[in-house]
Image (cartoon, helix red, strand yellow):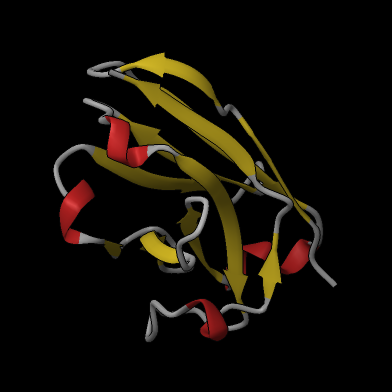
Length: 125
């Protein structure tokens, strides 16, 4: 069993930055692909970014490409999401997710096995 705990959310003005962290329990974290998803009120949960087990491959949804960066530190069992140039449309609850596979071969929420409780990101205009 893997437990995921997100932190780093908050209120920021448009154009600002936030760094989300996801701390994972369990020694097998380093063998899992990890992802970030978000969900705004009344909308479905959507893929934001993902990273393979050793951090050599990253994937992003088009609307965050060039603004967000996903990274991981396997020694610290932590995955990060650096968010720059934030826009009001980035406002959502952000969720960390783990997949019982080394590679990112899916970006759908159903393809991920473990989930954190979420952290709120609000971007004001």
